[in-house]
Length: 369
Image (spheres, rainbow, N blue to C red):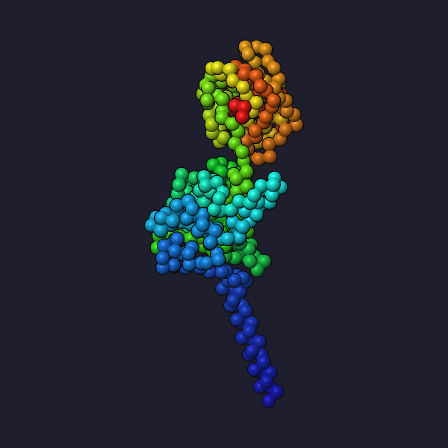
């Protein structure tokens, strides 16, 4: 009897070891979560409506922007943003507004142009499942409205202590029209490949802030007054040119082309000035500088803003020192107390952040409000 019990016990232990060994061989010692490919019997807009309490805020934004038809009959991929993402964005905005004694804003009354821009980030042309995003460098995407450049790539997250052992997620990027990944704003998905009659839905993780990192700045930024150079016209000049000459890709005219993704790059050589000669004199007490795409050590750190009647005798209107841009492509608005209508205005750069090479994306002189 005792021998029988020992025999049965040994068989049980052997069976258990065999089962464990088989599981380890099958999955390399970890559980590899299978992709969840769900098919919904309706269009993409219907899918959102079928999830009450999940996508209510997104539906409000889509309805207000007139995007319902796009999600009903167009081939699109939707990176669906859930309610918590909108709540985070609005809380951040209204906390700042409260400090300024301003009334709170809601999806129903925030600036429609900005809401339309940010909502369209998440609606991509064509049907893009995870399989189509598995290229080595991911895939460049275009938004439905203006073809805004977004990007997506697939990766596997860690699980059970193993790198890349978990389910696949999508890294969904707002490229900010930059080829440099360090300038992108990235979110991830929590579920993928929900197929509808007209598209694909990937659900953005709940910790994402709607609008990426632009929601608050877009809705609190006060644009500068009109650009005098565009309004009146005139002649732009600089005492320094790019080493490649006036026809190079980073010549001095790039600083007035209205595109913050181009730049003027040149050696400082002690000081560098940029000058506007207006067709007719005008009062400017506002000017703007916009940081370029990379290499913050090339940013201007100290300068003077000056006005002149004849282009030879200059009056200092504003002086800045120890200045730093916090971000790339960042427009800064500077104000002074000038009340005189000068024909000439210039900025004289005297110090850079930590370089002998100067760069700037945009420079404008602006009307007095």
